[in-house]
Amino acid sequence: MYLGGLAQIALGIGTIFLRYTPGASADGLGTVVTLLGAGMILFGLFVIALASGVARGSRAARTSATAVMLLGLALMLADALTAGDGDWSGVVIQSIAVLAVVAPLRIGRGRRYFLR
Image (cartoon, rainbow, N blue to C red; front, side):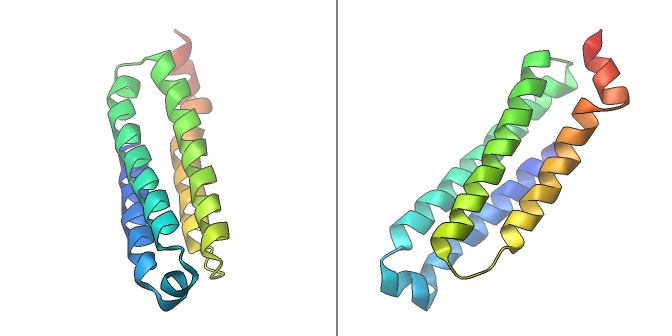
C-alpha cells in the first residue's frame, strides 16, 4: 500500500507540472489540472495513512483503502479526459497500482488475514 500511495503522489506531482504545457496554458486548463494534481497528492497521502491501519488488521482500513484506490483511479481518469492530450500512461500506471494494492487485500492469504 505504501508503494501505491507513493506512486499516486508522484503522478499527482507530474500532473501539476502538466499545467505548464502550451496546450493547458492556452486553453485555460491550468487551474483545473493543478487542482486534479493536488487531489491526487492528497489521495496518495491518505492511502499511506490507511496503510498503517491495514498493517494492524483493521477491516475498516481495508475497505477504505480499496475505496480510496478506486477513487484515485477515477481521479486519474478524469485528469486524462480533462487534459485531452491523449496521454493515458497515468491511467495505466494507476491501474497497476490499484491491482497491486487491492488484489493482495482481497484474495489469498490477505483475505484470510482479515476474516479472523
